[in-house]
Amino acid sequence: MPSLVVVGTYWGDEGKGKITDFLADKADIVVRYQGGNNAGHTIQNKNKTYKLHFIPSGILHPNTMCVLGNGMVIDPVELVSEMEQLSDAGVETDNLRVSDRAHLILPYHKLLDGLSEERRGPNKIGTTRKGIGPAYMDKAARCGLRIVDLLNPKELEQRLSENIRDKNMLLQRYYDVPGLDEKAVLASLLEAADKLRPFIDDTSALINDALDQGKYIVFEGAQATLLDIDHGTYPFVTASNPVAGGVCIGAGVGPTKIDKVMGLVKAYTSRVGDGPFPTEIFDETADIIRERGKEFGTTTGRPRRVGWLDGVILRYARRVSGLDALCITLLDVLSGMEEIKICTHYELDGQRTDRFPASVSSLGRCNPVYETLPGWDQDISDCKNWEDLPANAQAYIHFIEELAGAPVAIVSVGPGREQTINVREI
Ligand code: GDP
Ligand code: IMO
Ligand code: MG
Image (cartoon, rainbow, N blue to C red; front, side, top):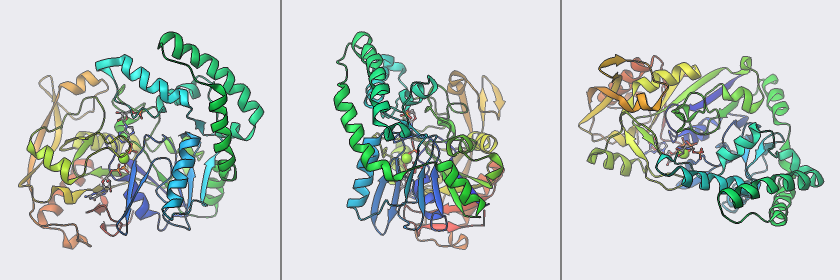
């Protein structure tokens, strides 16, 4: 029953796509269990770059099945377009399966996402405007449409009509913008439904059968711990549960079926979108990191905010997801830095604290307390083994292990699949 969860420890973009693609070599199935196309997972293979949004990062492996789980929200038109783009790039998508229970992102969700951000003004969340929040709102309000509804055009038409009537009222009367044309929305849905039909399945049954047969499953998180709607920096979060527990709900597997959880830790921290960020840096070091790490959003192209690694967050992520091991990514980006800072704890209103606070106003008042470690000069992007890493890079990794209270299993030294060092088995 081997299964592994890959989960981001910070605010996303820790390299989940790259590492999932690396692990997928051995995986029978890769499963996305939450989120939608707010995710931007980049995979680089043989100098080709693939940017995935809905599709799990196992897709470059022809023998690996890729599942979009029930916990996801899916824009069927955009999913079809992503499949076609991959197909045009020579990547087969026959091995894709889409949960019949996943909820749909519909055009009104995208409109409402943008409009509600504009209405919030300076208090905006900084969402990706992909309609994620509004789609999950409808799921909770019990008026969402699901993938299974695409298979029943009559029912789809009736439920869509009821929803568009309500949403148009909101769009026209509250936001003062034109409503949507029901016929056009239905037509585009039916066209996408025809293309998706062969891929729709009861994916919880499929995953559990595979687990019973001893197959190896990787659950690929999107977003990350601090964007989790329960455990993140609310309200500056996404609308789903990226933490490891989200796998049970979002893939339809019991907690007893999860073997191991690996936390992805960028060698520094990044955040795209608004909200407090204690270790954020603004000086020229930030510009160097942003340029070297190509820290610009995959989905939105926005420059990402960057900062030093934060041990308080690491320990918090270990707790809420039960991390067994860590994977350090983008370590190569720190090469050439004279000194590297790492936050060991915070000071909040003059008191030392090791706890990650619940309120964003408290988090905004947390001052990071740093330990400074010496950097290394060597380019490490060709290192293949632990022994190849400079002593100071090894010391940095050991410091992270101590701080987090979890061992490092993998170190990533570049975006390519081969730029990955296996430190120990997970
Ligand atoms: P995800 O959302 O967690 O999958 O991460 P993204 O793909 O959005 O962002 C990570 C970026 O870093 C991508 O452009 C990757 O190609 C790149 N990347 C991943 N691992 C490494 C690494 O170890 N070194 C470098 N330089 N780039 C990496
Ligand atoms: P991956 O999977 C980084 C952020 C948005 C915003 C907040 C809410 O690539 O790590 P949403 O559109 O989800 O309602 O936006 O969450 N956000 C991400 N930031 N990486 C992501 O995904 C993100 N997905 C959402 O910037 O702050
Ligand atoms: Mg990303």
